Length: 289
Image: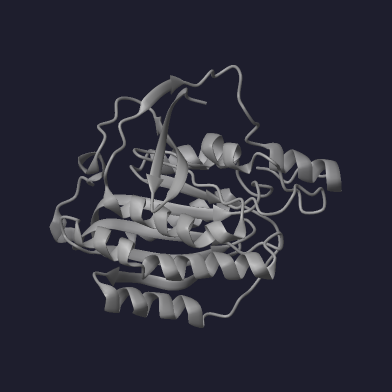
C-alpha cells in the first residue's frame, strides 16, 4: 500500500462548521482543475466543469427514514440557490451528473442516467427523476462494488469534464467484494476524486455491523484525490445543509490551502478490512476477494 499524505482543513460554509479531509496519493500532484483535465481533446464530448457520479447506499442498514433523508438531501441540495450559484461560477457554467444506488458487490442500479445540469430548470428535471424513483433496499454493503460500477460510467458519459468526481454516501463499512482501499487506489490512478458522506445517525450495532468511527474509515479507506473531503452527518437536522454544502464544494473547484500532516503508515487509525472481519466474526465466513 502506498504512503498517503493527509490534509486537514476546516471550512464553515452555509453556517455549518465542517471538518474536511483532503487526501492525495501517488507522486506529485498539481492542485486545481488543471490536474483533473483528461488527456483527450474536448471534441471527445460536451465540455462541462465537472462529471459527477452520485452513489447512494440502499443496503438494509439504511432504514426507511435514513433513505428518505438521504434522497431529500440530494434533491434539495441540487436545486438550492447556493448550488445553482456555484454552478454559474464555473468555466462552462454546467456539469454532467448521474445518480445510482448501491448495496452488495453486484447490486447497483442507475436511477438517473447522465444529464446536463446548467440551471434551475435542468436541476429540477434531474431531481424530479430522483423523486419519482421507487425506494428499494438490498443485502450487504460493498463500497468497492460501487466504485467498480462508477469507474466505467465516466468513459461512457459522452462528456469532457475539467474534473471527475464520485460522491459516495452510506452508513456502513465495506463487507463484501474487493478490498475497498485497493479499488479506491485504482480509481485515483485514473485522475478521479472520491468524496464521502458517512451517515452516523444510529449508535453502533452488532446486528447491522455499524462502527463508531465511520468518518475515520471513509477518510482513511474510501476518499482520495485532489481536494477530496469527508462530511459526516451525525444528526437528522444536518442532512439538508451537509448534503448541500458537499455538492457546492464539489463543483466550486476552490482548493483550500492545506495544513499538511504526514500520516504514520505503521500506525493506521482504522483497518480498511474491518467490515469483512466483522462479517467473518458474525457468520463464520470471510467474504473477501
